[in-house]
Structure formats: C-alpha cells, structure tokens
Amino acid sequence: MSAPELRRLRSSASERNVLVLSALAFLRGTSQSMLRAIWQPFVLSLGASMSELGVLESLGGFRGVTNSLIQPIGGWLADRRGRKSLLLIGELLGALAFSVYALAGRAGDWHMLVPGVVFLGLSFGALPVRDSMAAESSAEAGGRARAYSLIVFGSAASGVLSAVLAGVVADRWGFGQVFLLGICTQSLCLLLIALFATETLDPVRRRSLSLRELAATLRGVFVPPRRLRSFYLATTVDIFVWGVGSAVFYGTLTETYGFSATQLGILTSITSASWAVTQLPIGRLIETHGRIRSLVVSELLGVVLMTGRLLSTSFESFAVLQILNGLIPATWIPALRAWMSDHVGDEQRAEEMGRLQAFRGLLSFPAPYLGGLIFERWGFGGPILVNLIGALVAALLLWHFVPETQEESPGEPEE
Image (cartoon, rainbow, N blue to C red; front, side, top):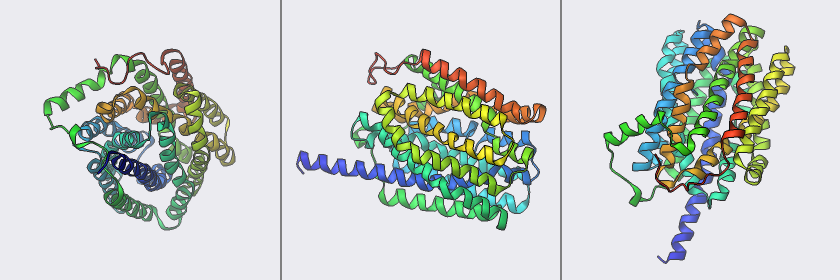
C-alpha cells in the first residue's frame, strides 16, 4: 500500500472514530441523564438521609473516590495496551451498576447500592481513554476543541428527552423500569465499540505492564508536573465547591420543595437542551478566544447560577435557571480537555488526563458528604453559598495563574 493510500485509510478511520465516540457519548449520556434525574429521589425513597446520600456520592457514582482512583489506572493501561479494550470494560461496568441498582430497589435497602456506585465509579476509568482517542482521531491539534465539542454535544443532546422520560417512567411504573432502560442502553454502547471503534494506539507504542511503573504513576497523583500545577489547583477548587453545592442538589430540591421525579427530569432536560444547542458554537469560540478564557467564563456563569438558586423558591424559576446551567459544561468540558491535550504529549496523554481527574477527585471526594451535612445544619442555601464563593475563587485562580500557552513543549520530559 502506498503512503498516500495509507494516510487516506488512517484519516477515514480517525473520522469514523470521532463519529463513533459522538454516538457513544449520546448513548452513554442517555443512560446517565436518566440516572441523574431519578437517582437522588430513588436513594431517599429507600430510607437514606441527605448525609448518607452524600456518602454514596463521595464513594463512587458520577464523582467519588472510586471514580478518582480508577482514572489514572485506566489511562496508564490504555497508554500501554490500547484504547478499545478499556472502552469495552468501562461500558460493561456501567451495565453492572444499573443491574445492582435494580436489585437494591427490589430489596428496598439503600445499603445494597454501595457495590453499584463502586461499579459506576470504576466505569469512569474509560474517561481518559475516550479523551485520548478523541485527541488522536482529530485531524490536527487546532481541531481538538471542535472534536471534543462534537462528542460533548452527543452527550448533551441525549438528555433532552431521556431525563423527562426517566422521570415519567419512575413516577408511573417505578424506578426499576428506568434501570432496565439503562441496562439496554449500556448494552448498545458495548455493541457500538465492538463493531465500529478503531484502535488508535500505534502497535509500536505499546509497552509491557510493570507494577513498579503503575505504583510510580499512583504516587505521582499528588505531585503534578510543575508546569501543570496551577491548572491542577484551580480546577480542583472548582470540582470541590461544585461537589458541595451541586452534587446533592436534586436531593435538596426533593427534601425542601417536594419536587417529583418528573419535575427533576424536566430540569435535567432543560439543562441538556441548553447544553446541546450551545455546545458546537461555543466550541468554535474556544478555538478563537482560548481555553482559559472559556474556563473563566464558565465559573462566572456558575456565580450567576448560584445567586439565582439562592433567590428562587418555585419550580418555574429553577427551570429557567437550568438554561444557564447548560452553558456551564458547554464552556468548561471541551476547554479543559483541549487545554490538557495541548500541553501533554501523545505518549502520556491518557495517563496525565487520568492523573488530573484522580488529583481533583481524591482531594474533593468528601465534598458531597460535606454538602449533605451543611444542608442538614443550615438548610437549602448553605451548600449553594459555598458553591457561589468557590466558583468566584476558581475563576480568579484560572485568570491570574494559568497561562493559555506554556514555554515547555508537550514533548519535554516532565518532573
């Protein structure tokens, strides 16, 4: 095969991967949106308190210590043995989590949810793998934010209808039917990866597994590379304060205002619709105006959102604020991933992305539990006020201490 033909073949596979990752984001986002809409009222319906709900959120699920510990391990494995197999394992663990939730619902015991949140947390070991595959499937570094935006768009669009569907199904037929839908969606993810995803790790870059290297990677979680430390710090402040103020937000709405699962589904769908509509144009703005500026805007939007939540008392006012809530991930997620991809070389990208998530997660995992305690002590506004102040601090740290570009090239040795 000639060199031009080989380049065309690789380009075709890369374009297909971006489409596969976007479809995967849509399917996975569908299951996650359904779960987000009904999860906290489901846990509370099994007899858990708000602080016990916070414990579950801190342990695993969408954010927690399990989620944090597995990501550098997943990235480390993917940089040595390939991307595709790790993606398959991640979706299988997600399906297992939904199965455990269904069983816990049948038994009526919230303690049985513990292995489920661990399984869901472990499934996030594939997150740095997906991010790396997306970067490696982009035509050029300048297109990474656009590629990430397309993939994030798939995730956002999935929640427009699925969250409302989950709420209606839960209110009419019970939470267990929602978990059955989640199992089906995760199974489709497995088929999509198995049939259509193309491995992006060049065989010559594959390395043998060494427990000594893995131990060094895990030790390095708490010692970020010097040129990335300001970024690590600022984004860790972000995830901590959002964990306090937002990780148990739907639970606090249920306890304070008695919102139903359908109403929570509507709130989730509004966020997803706002996110989906704005994600692609915002991706182009990130390429034009820079990653750090977008991250700062995201934090300032959070300040406005938290102010609105402090002043709101009706479902309608919270619903309007969810439009703003959709702009926050649209301006944050692709900018964060693109900044990291720009500053980390191909040989370490998945590992470093996993290490970033681990660093942030391990330092912030008590945040949901703390949010639950603050709610029990000071009421609805307590966690939100912490979130408001912290988002402002994170914005100042990003603006003053994190450069858009750095003098060191991504290929330089890291400390």
